[in-house]
Length: 355
Image (tube, rainbow, N blue to C red; front, side, top):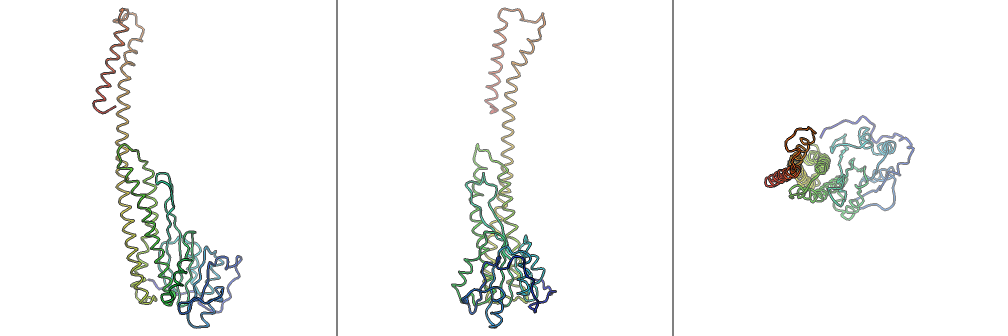
């Protein structure tokens, strides 16, 4: 976990700029917790920090949704966040990572959500991604969400019903959010499994035509899922084992369980990726066989059609001296020959499974 010294004044008496859009518009919830219990009343983020530091105990949990640069800058002045954190939080699109700035941990989590659909053969997307960024200090945790499917209100309510765990401080909230995100990974991979099974059944069902594009679509979604999930393994290990870790030892034990669940999800995604690779090869082989079969049928019909075409072409040259041209039964003999040859070719091709 790299240590990066702060270049910004931390918790100093700086005057934050007045944002064009009030910071409160980006605030989902702001609460002060003391001994695991939420203090009554409503607090702005500045009032909440002042209350905690006046008491000398407890912590603030501030939840933000899609803050802009000015709103995030205002929050950073209140909590003393590094300017690089603010830049990452505003622009989003970060890989899962863990960074340390003095006594503040910055954890980026990618969230995923399963998009319901009627059939995997008709949909274009099955996974939606978002981000949660967590700033954890000695007496605060700030959660910044990007995306509409990553709500944390139920996580907050569950923690508030468990004061013993919440009394462990901001690290307990950090664990609860990470655990919630990884559990959502499990739910998404469970929902994706039937889609993979449906594609597998289509590929290996005889006499069915499978669109390779649908396999590519599903493989693309699995790649997107893998990019959101797999990189989180290293930050989780850092939270558990990194030297000088500010996470209390009793909370680190809970992160081990999160890491175990994350490993399970990573294994599922690897299995999906491998299965879809195999299905893609099988589907391409199946399409090739279908194309060869179609070409044989076309070639057989062309050969059959060539017989009357050739004979009619010969007798259509209008030469005066041609065998059987003035023969009384010549027309009927030619028709009989055409029918006999075409029927013979048809029977031959049919026996060889070309038709």
